[in-house]
Image 1: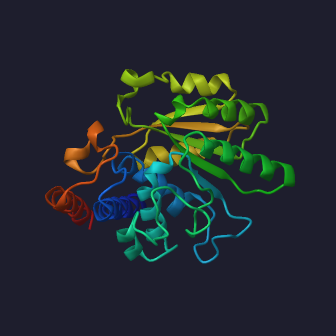
Image 2: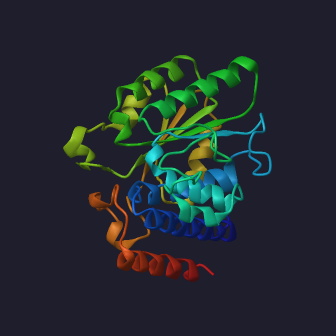
Length: 278
């Protein structure tokens, strides 16, 4: 990736993080930690990888994306707004009565959302169904999903993984946001799923482990994914709360909103990071 492209993507990721903080602060609730950790993954998919058209969000030939860890909706909403699916001003209506932007993605009301998610494990199952449908009907669209490393403690994830591997769904790529923190503590403290790559490999997936906050690594992994005839799991090692100093690697920011003072600090830090990229 050339330096200019990478810098542009880094700018977009900064704006996405600002959108996340704006939305969660306005709502006085939400999940900032795991939203911030996934900013680079979502930015790359929506701005460099996926075949999509914000002017035609229901295009049958579009690539699909499923946010299996649906509580990271603030990140998806911020990316969709930045990509032009809806007015960014709506981010400040997150979780408000009457807003289309509720706590988890809703495909009936939000342009660009391909699957309503929230119950952990069901998103990847739906993504597997989409990929199977594409294979069955000869469609050439790709399906991408994002799971949490806490989410993969859910047994339904592995039923879906087993099915995808057995059916050779090479049109399916799943990212695991491996920020190593979930609602109650570290993955190891709660119910370790490590080694994550070996578990997917046991179900006949091709696995790639990367720095999930680095655009070059994301690009290289997705290029590699195109070369194999299996479903692909990209284990993306990320920093929970990335970009906001007091949220980074802090489990208490899994599902909490900043107060006015901490909101100002977060916005100042993110604006400074954005200005440094100009």
